[in-house]
Length: 461
Image 1 (tube, rainbow, N blue to C red):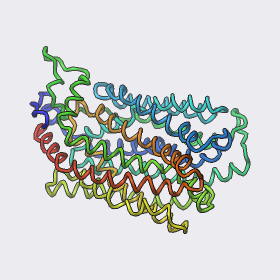
Image 2 (image 1 turned 60 degrees about the horizontal axis):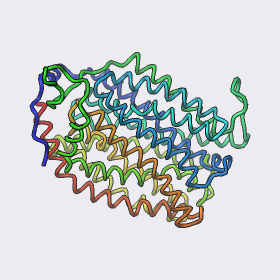
Image 3 (image 1 turned 180 degrees about the horizontal axis):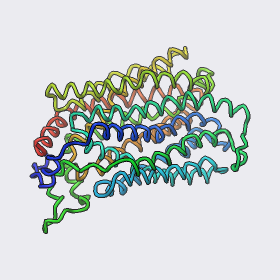
Image 4 (image 1 turned 30 degrees about the vertical axis):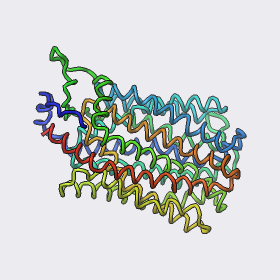
């Protein structure tokens, strides 16, 4: 049973009477956030490009390189995001985002200059703390920049940065890494001799610091809207700085029929899609392609086709919402989750590399149709007072499962199949088992989610 509908507090009415931020400013904010997503997620394919070299340099196996380069740093980021998100529900969100990016960039440079595995890992962990509050604060700000019916489109446009992060590192990074790898090492002014994988990481560290400064000094903090919970006001009438954790847990539990399918479905889907870190190694081992060759083809696909998928998903969710479907956002997520499965399972099993590339590209583009609506789906049923913290829990699941994906594939390859040439079967098995379960879970949650959307819309009108 859902939590009884609370009365809207006076702050809600005051905020609702104010006009929304101007289109120019809110789309400028989306642009900055899109570039931020690019810098954050570009690290994933870049790390994928250097997997084999780091593995060889430090004499690691597949499980170890997954743990040290992806899984452990991302798990630390996920854990740190939970306490930081409480600040985003009460204090300046642009300060959390901008200051965090500056820290992330500084420690990113430190990681790029590391000469030992320990130093590299420590710098990555500390940098993760800097980026930990980015997602929850960004999602919370977008909820106050755009009306609810326009959120899916805003998230879809912002996530073009995610597509660029998948494409450009493969195209540019693949070409640069190919050139650097042929030289074995590079001597840079003031920095001395660095390995190719260290040079690659420098490419994405400096932009973090630049974006942090732009967000701090050019973005305005929007007025918070949809503050509807009684917990927002104390017995004395004073506005509380932060909603108690017990109230957030109570809200999630009271609306558990809507929330648990979203969390579980997201977790299963992300665990399967987290296998993307192994794509460069897959083409090296299975089809004999170099990182440079694979990066060019895969990068072009992501840049040319993936943005259209994101925009289509946002358009479709908005269209269904205008037609009266309260569950429009999650309905698009369900459609995308189901439609991409045949391509996700089959790409690793075919013998032709170009057919494999076509199949994996279709899988990725179809899955991305649900990316914007899935982000918006959480915002649509969460009151403002707890938006950043519940978003942090959503991103916690996303980050933990995304980090676990490479580890799962490494374990299957090392311990189940026992042969690194069997990487293709590990990828296929992961998608074949997890993705269909995610579809069933999303379907179970469709009706409760629509009911939750209807309830919270009634509170803020």
